[in-house]
Image (cartoon, rainbow, N blue to C red; front, side, top):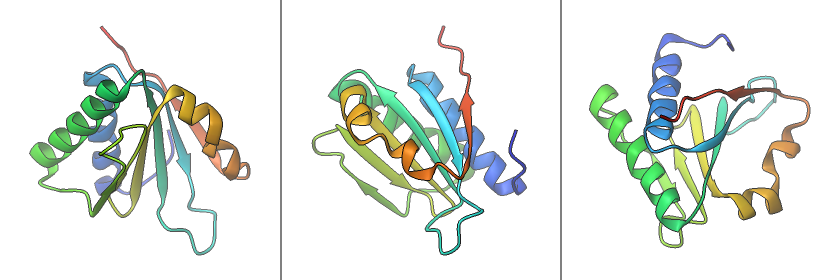
Length: 124
């Protein structure tokens, strides 16, 4: 696991649980802390299978973080079409993609120098 502060650890944990609760797919975390002038410390990227699934992941993450940590995203984009949704929690930015949009943009490849972790989640 990537070493972070306790507050960031808690946020990441709640985000991942929110994704897992609604069966988000291919969860990956990118550590951006080695990049100068970065906009955040971590990206968490996951996929959903449809507009409805992406929206469900979005709502699950927001609900889980709000309930556990009393935090709301600073900014949210993409809710309307639910193909690529971004949740900005300042230190952690969550990208929720439909699979074909994620395959097209491949944002994970933009950060080749950064440490990446696939996050294994159990989808019951």
